[in-house]
Amino acid sequence: MVRGFINEPDPSATLSQGFWPDSEINAHINTANAKINGLISSFDSTFTNVVQTSFLTEAPSLLFPQGRKTYELPSDMRTLIRVELVTTDGCVTKLTNSKFPRQEAYGEEIPTAMGQPCHYLWRGKNIDFIPTPDAAYTINLWMDRRQQLLTQNTDLPIAPPDYHDMIALWAAILCLTKPSRPSDSKAGADYASIYAMRERQFITDYAAMQGEAADNPVIHGYGGY
Image (cartoon, rainbow, N blue to C red; front, side):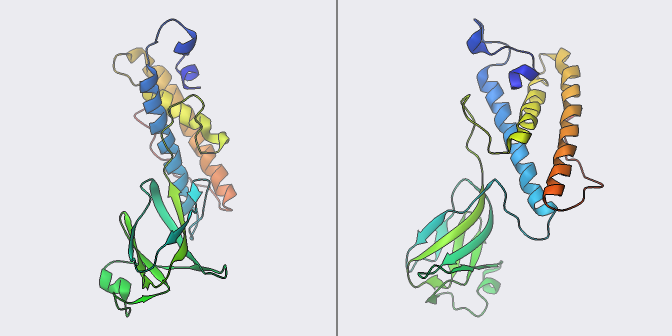
C-alpha cells in the first residue's frame, strides 16, 4: 500500500531496487504504526472518565510465587491498566493502585508483612505487591502492549483494518520528505491533507464508539505541511 502511495513498484516484481529500499520503507511503516497505536491509546483516556480497554489490551495471567514482593513487568508493556488477584476459588479481586512515595503507598501496612495482596505499587519497570504474597497467587495484569516490529509482507498491524490506510499514509508522508527528492513535497502535502481528514474521521468514529460527542475534536500534529 505504501509503494502505491509513493508511486513506486514493488522491487520484488522489478529488476531494480527502487528509490526507497525495503529497510527504509519498513522503518517508516513501524514509525507510522506506533503513531496510530499511540493515537488510539490516547483516546482511550481522552474520551472517558474511567480506563477503557481496547484492541491493544491484553491480560496475561501470571503465577507469582510466595514470599516475593517485587517483580519485573513485561518489557513490551506500554501502559499498566488494571491488576487483579484470582483466588483459588476463582474469584477475581481488583487490587488498589498505590502511589509514591513508598511511605504513603504502604500506609499502615508493615513493609515486611506477608498476606494476600490487596494493593500494588507500580515503579517504572517493576511492580510491588502489598503485603508480600504469603502464598502463590495468580495475577491478571491488564496492559497495553507495544506491537512487535513489522518486517515481513505478511505482518499485519494490530490496529483495526479500518485504519490501516492511515498507517500507510503516514509512512508515505515520511518517505516523501526525503531531502534528495524535493519534487515529492507536493505529493507529501496532499497526503498530509488526506491524513488530517482521516484523523478527523477516526476521532469522530472513536467518539461515537465510546458514546461521546466530538463536536470540537482536537487534531494531533501531522507534520510540517
